[in-house]
Image 1 (cartoon, rainbow, N blue to C red):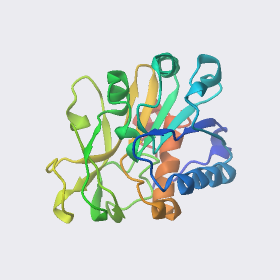
Image 2: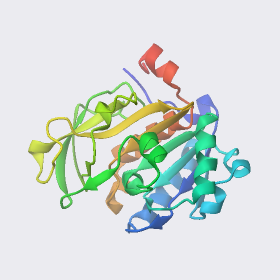
Image 3: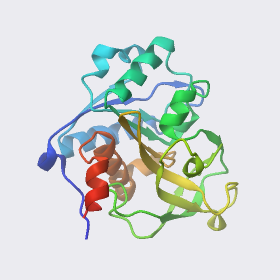
Image 4: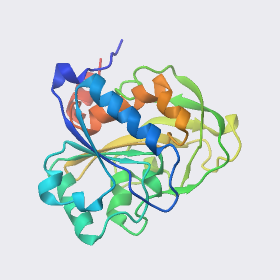
Length: 244
């Protein structure tokens, strides 16, 4: 059986947690920030929080193993900051997107490729069935095949699995028969990861509600995403060992 990796066993890492908004601002941002701070204290990594896009410069980004877009929205980086972030990923950096990270930077096509797609719409908050498609990843290893939970369930503009220019590895899909308002059909990815231009990208569409950030299974999902996006667990290890 797979088991979660502890950062103390694998080496610590530095995470930049970015939650700038230029559009809808989630009321759950404070709870999400507290959750990441607690996770950092418990797991032994360093978390730096910012809503200042000026932190996206070459010198500053070099200090971080992973940049988390935590409930961001809208146009949050200018052209120079975008260029610095592209170079950061191309130099081996990691990206982690949470929920409305996909409702961010619509006019920056590179970002859409990094994340995998963009947000399209959502129905009201409700319970839905999540199918765990891949339980060999640290973000899903703790879950049963079926996960019932309450959240705001995103529809996306495209199915990231079907993009021929990317090699998206889908972790979980939504069962649209279990809730109202899905419009992607039988294949509705809700969490995935991939290598991208020398770096790493991991995304979850979940995390709208404040309650999510007190939910052990969701927090473990985020922790597994951080392990991958930070480079603690790398693609070659995942593929060679099945994280077993």
